[in-house]
Length: 91
Image (cartoon, rainbow, N blue to C red; front, side, top):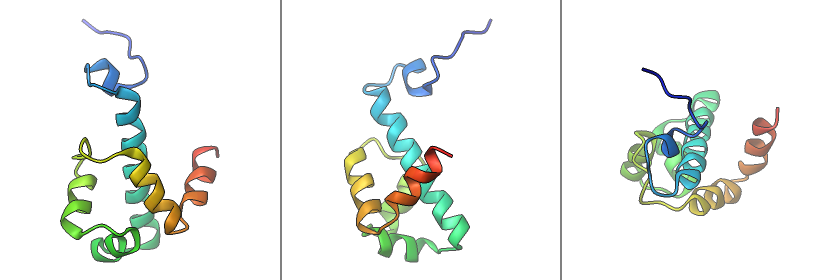
């Protein structure tokens, strides 16, 4: 038996604040994309975004319930990476 998706896996699974979770997932995916495209190490990315390596590693592993989406967006913005994120989103 199959169910039609709502388009938000977090809503489909019954998570609290599914919209916020989806936004955080998109921002973390964007951070992973930056690392890959720029060939940045975990250390370089963590330093650029003002995270410690352990915290960034946890985020990249999908453990981001504890962090606010505005914190992720703010750190991208402070690193001058947010404009790139917006352009990528609407390509």
